[in-house]
Length: 421
Ligand SMILES: Cc1cc2nc3c(=O)[nH]c(=O)nc-3n(C[C@H](O)[C@H](O)[C@H](O)COP(=O)(O)OP(=O)(O)OC[C@H]3O[C@@H](n4cnc5c(N)ncnc54)[C@H](O)[C@@H]3O)c2cc1C
Figure 1 (cartoon, rainbow, N blue to C red):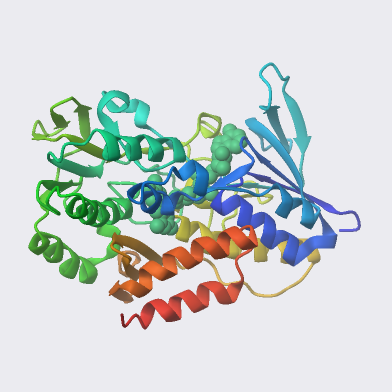
Figure 2 (cartoon, rainbow, N blue to C red):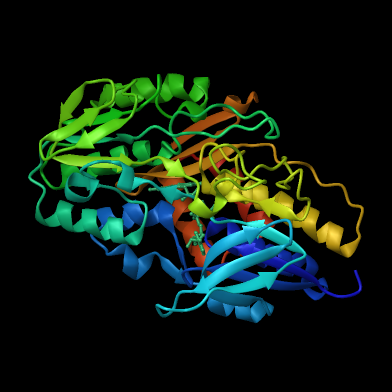
């Protein structure tokens, strides 16, 4: 291409921000890059629970402004709500949201990358605002921090997920069927809550019940890890309830499930359904629910100039930032090669669950597996090292503005595999 290719990235949290930084690194002089997001900071969601249990307001510590990083790259940033994507005419419509009353504007593109994540549908859970708690943004984090530190009396606690409604399309590559969108945080929070309760004289795992809509919790951890993890949770004293078929409602007294059962609980921590945004519903490039259809290079088969990465993509199950990172690494290479006219071969995404979880008390777990997708990798380690890696990754992400070096991921894997304390 003689003139610069106009690349538009929609969304600038984990997937969109890192995609923008990688595109600049790989194709800087050949592209005119614009990023649109309705907020001008990154929400570092995975570390919100650690801040909450340490009695910090996550709004003070987990919102990372990114504008200066994009400016340094020469990337344009527009703070606006994306309102419409017209893939046939390669136009995106948006409404600036700094002040109420702005009129809708539009921008054309040669390539668009959708990284808009999903709606977390708490509004579909009756009683959530009055009786529910969660950790998925800084508002919710601060709400549960205030509750735990000022109101909680030490009564029974339930932690678990609502049912996930995965989409389908004959054009989506085969991916496993998930009954919950993202159950890793459930286990992580269960560990840290028990440690927090112990420290505050409320009795550790006593009275904490984990629940899942499915046959088995964190199914995506694969059979080998589950054979170790589930007995471990039982031996530690957690209650466990499966096959709830989803959450019916939360009440002052507890939680009611769609299978007709209920649990008494003072503290109700829930992870909701992950639902595609309204603007992605009924689009010619999305599946029957509104998840964006891509191949494993993250490109839409009918609109080759349209890519999608992260939670908004149909192939991203479970909804995990780590999967989004694998996807954007592939998508950025594919897109940069195409724009630069290079013929370098790029391997498609081969999904792998790689995660560091907090367990409280400066301990954590490291999980690395692809068994759920038919592979044979399965590592589960616990100790102080995974906790340090979780904190270090957050710092690396903050300092580099999402421009995580390739060696950073490799190094964290090597250290995780060799956890010895
Ligand atoms: C409590 C919790 C803990 C987690 N822990 C982990 C973990 O340890 N490891 C892990 O890998 N994953 C974890 N996850 C999952 C992880 O947070 C998500 O997978 C990740 O945030 C997805 O990134 P994304 O960029 O695709 O979407 P998002 O992070 O949802 O970002 C979407 C972006 O798009 C913007 N946006 C949305 N709609 C519009 C619009 N119409 N106009 C303009 N902008 C818009 C939003 O403002 C946002 O910046 C956790 C999730 C939760 C809830």
